[in-house]
Amino acid sequence: MRIAAVQATPSFLDRAATLEIVIEKIGDAAALGAELVAFPETFVPGYPLWVDITNTSSWEDPEQQAAFARYLDQSVEIDSPEFHRVVDAARDNGVFVYLGVAERSRSGGSIYCSLVAIDPRAGVVSVHRKLKPTFGERLVWADGDGAGLAVHKVGDVRVSGLNCWENWMPLARSALYAQGAQIHIATWPGSVSLTEDITRFVAREGRLFVVSVGASYREEHIPADFPLRDQVIAHGAKYYNGGSMIAGPDGTVVAGPLRHTEEILIADLDLDEVRRHRQNFDPAGHYSRPDVLKLTVNRDRLA
Image 1 (cartoon, one colour):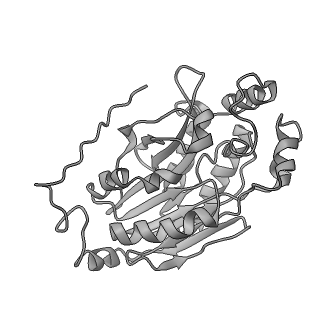
Image 2 (cartoon, rainbow, N blue to C red):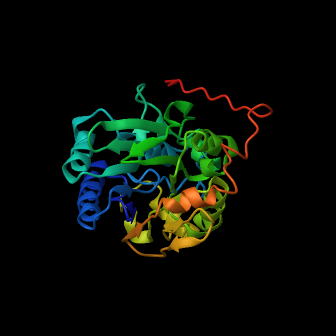
Image 3 (cartoon, rainbow, N blue to C red):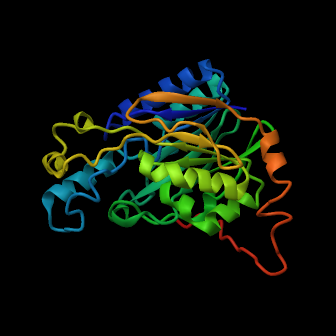
């Protein structure tokens, strides 16, 4: 299977413009022969990179309120005609897409970090909401649920996906291994330091391919009218350098990591490697003990 990890930069906090980038990159990846295309965490409309470097916890700060309000305004409604253009692009190009979005809640006042799986024939087949936002992210994202802990068929291949640090959650990984995942998509805001170790670890643990995909952000990508722009710049470059990479089922690096570039990382994955490496270890099969250890997953959509 040929896969594409799209390391790109969103039009930060501009949903409509970033959706245009997504549609363009889907076409570019399809032209390169990709069957599966993956985008970074909350690529639309961008990762809230201010949360860990400004005083986000101040509930009386008008600039923090304004930043959140703008992020909420530019978040995605999955059922909207605007987002359906991405579904159409997946269908028209014949590719399966994993796309990270900031999803607006039904209440209209909360945001989920969501990974949307789009089948070229069936459309949106799952929306996985990040189970536990990481550290400062909890001030802008709501807790998700298990409804999206699903493995999908892309042709004859089983593919799964998780957002950022929930790739470190052993039970979340186990829930996907148990469904026979052969390729795992790990989305990130974009940093080699985040992806390099965990990508290889999960690949070797699960005896599968792991495709990590991150974005690239620099100072010039922050809009001039963003309320916290000066604070973010004064902090001194907590910007993201990509880190997109692919590891094989023995933990070896297949491609990447990419640094400081906007680039589509292409790789041809031989799924026979997954079967060969499961000869000596299958964490959800012959090397499990279901009579001793059991995992219960609540797959209800909670809100």
